[in-house]
Length: 85
Image (tube, rainbow, N blue to C red; front, top):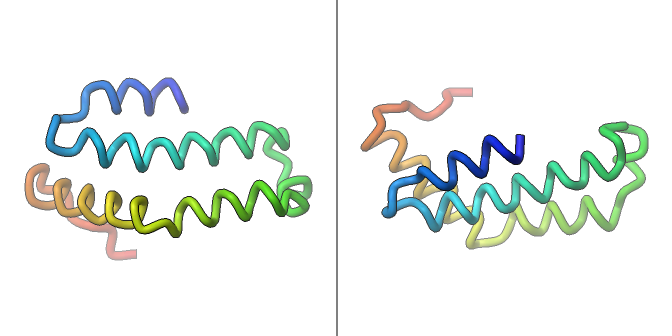
């Protein structure tokens, strides 16, 4: 996954490269935490410090703003509609 994200990040257009780097950095940290606990959900449930760090990262204003800008870019430039959930 991290290799695929890196490839996508390398090919991101200049106008969204910083936002892609921000979002993918947090996703990469999440992947590292999952790998650290061998993808075992029971072990992950006890990983309070790692989980708190990840939660803080996804709630940070920089991450939220980058995600919003990417969503707008995908919709306006790429024609990808937001997920209706």
